[in-house]
Image (cartoon, rainbow, N blue to C red):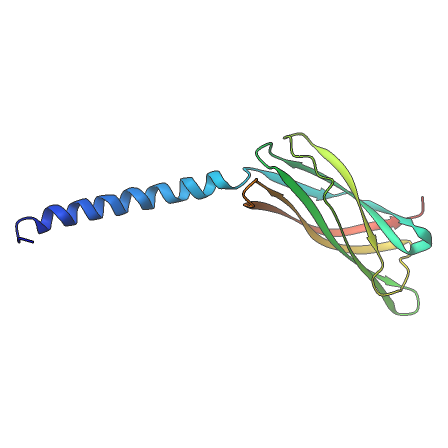
Length: 148
C-alpha cells in the first residue's frame, strides 16, 4: 500500500464506520415493539377463600408486537404478623394498539391466605415481536383486596 492511497482508505473506512453507527440505533429500535403501557387498577378480588387474588391490569401494546404477557408478584401483611405472597402471570394479552383489561390470578405461594386489605403489587407487562425483541412497562403499586 502506498502512502498516497492511505488517506483514501482511511476516509472510506471512517465513512463506512459512521454510516453503520448511525444506522445501528434505527435498526435496533425497529426491532422492538414501539409502545407498551400498563397500570394496575385500584382494587383486587379475593378468590378461593384467599387462596389467590385476581388483579385487573389495564394495558395497551402496539400491533407490531406478536405476543405479550404480564407477570405480577403480590405481598400482603395479614393478621398474626404474617405475610401472604404469590406470583402469577398471564399470556392473555392482545396487542392491537387499543386499551384492554385483563385479570391476572396470583395464587398464594407460601400457604398463607390473602385477606381483605392493602396488598403491594410489583411486576411488568412485556410485548415482544416475532424475533423475541421485547419492550417492557413496569407495574408497581398498592391495591385494595376485596371480597367478590
